[in-house]
Amino acid sequence: MKIDLPEKRYYTIGEVAKAFNVNTSLLRFWEKEFKEIEPKKKTSGVRKYTPKDVENIQLIYHLLKEKGMTIEGAKNQLKVSKSAEQNKISLLKKLAGIKKELEDLRDNL
Image (tube, rainbow, N blue to C red; front, side, top):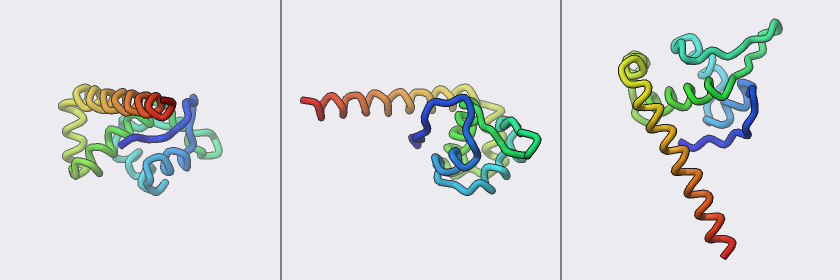
């Protein structure tokens, strides 16, 4: 899944939820279930997600929503092959960027 977020240091829970087309409550649930998601919290309780958090959410989203794994299955998969899945996600991001560049070039011809 390609997400559309501008490059920033921090994202709000609403921005992240909208990018993944999920409810904010689901992100809060995933935060409790997966130690890989650790947003910074202000004293007011407002969550600030880093790009690394967003990358981890994308990986979890891929495992749960796209691959159809259970929470436990996703946790086990993260333990076993986190770097392999991250490499796959990274490669997909790069390919999406290349595709966009090629489409832009084609449109400018």
